[in-house]
Length: 163
Image 1 (cartoon, one colour):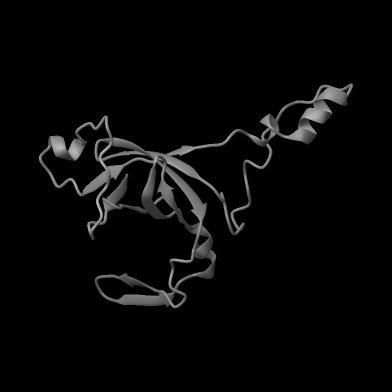
Image 2 (tube, rainbow, N blue to C red):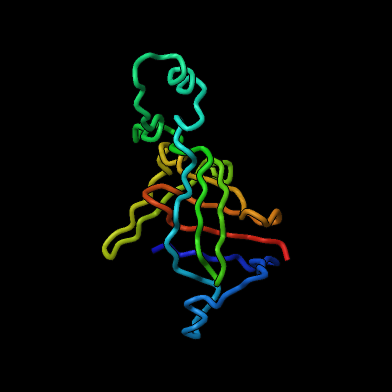
């Protein structure tokens, strides 16, 4: 499960017309934080709209078997998916996150600290991790801002919206 939080500094998450009570609200708990399971919204496979595939299908005497193209990428590729979309149910609403690769909000001299019981390890941010950061907005809310890290799964989502 993923922890989703809103930032309250002169901002609030917009309430949509058909708002339902969230699970946390039904338990009478803090509603500024919600635990959710994100659902990735995948685009059509490349062969569904590829001009070359359609030409091959129209002009070939042989049967061309449709296959997914570009669906899987090597794990070392800098940007896995340049424009991912996710749908999450949080705060009693369904939110569609529209994202684009963006690491400009990460400080160039960022250090990561791992605090353990017996020691603390501090190291500079791994350069390979910069391909994992995305920003965007909630579809239908042009005033919203979303920032997320997709490294090792979706870890934290911050959703801001001007009141």
